[in-house]
Image (cartoon, rainbow, N blue to C red; front, side, top):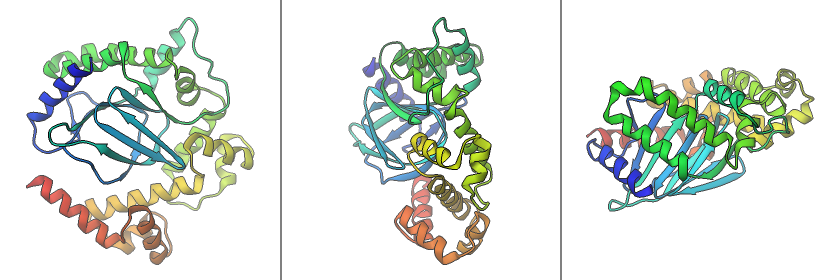
Length: 300
């Protein structure tokens, strides 16, 4: 199966310029290719199946580092900022991968239809884990990629493939984590509600008490469960969201450093620049200039 997936992704990406990532005719399905190792990059991971078909990649979220290689997949159950890096790739053997974003409404429907659904009322577990990409799950990825050759079939057939993906994840080794974190009504789901509020209001002054109230938990219990789920504190989570958005504003909207800092909630541009350099490895001006140079090379 791995050879089949490699061939399919290789053929798809060979017909397109650059390394990718490549969006596809299937909403939420992205194909990855890198012909060499990549520098670490910060991004916001959405709930998704991130499959490595060839090569190796790692992800750091908070204090956790997870590596997944060919034949494995990263399962992300909660939206979170993280650092990712491709560490095994070359022109002769590029990194190849597929990202399939989850449809949580479908996940809920599948879970409700299970004869013996995984227990989902336990305390929160980590919001991301690595699983094997083999058997029926790998076949689902293969059939999803096959649909790219027949776009008219996508709206008819892809929903059933998504249901299968949800089924195999819920009934697999990590099923309890998927159910508990993505779907449950226990601690995990309440923390996720607070995460969504934090995501929508990350420019505002952070008060743990306010987030704990949304989660209907005591501040100490909320702080503990938040860190268990995301491997970072609420303050660290907010800071990464702010800095990622500021970076986007400077790169895509050509915002000045001070403007970007103010728009994401910083009152001090010097504090912003210090925290930015710690996260991205260079001061804002130098980092943005380097990113624009990289984008220009890809577009040339």
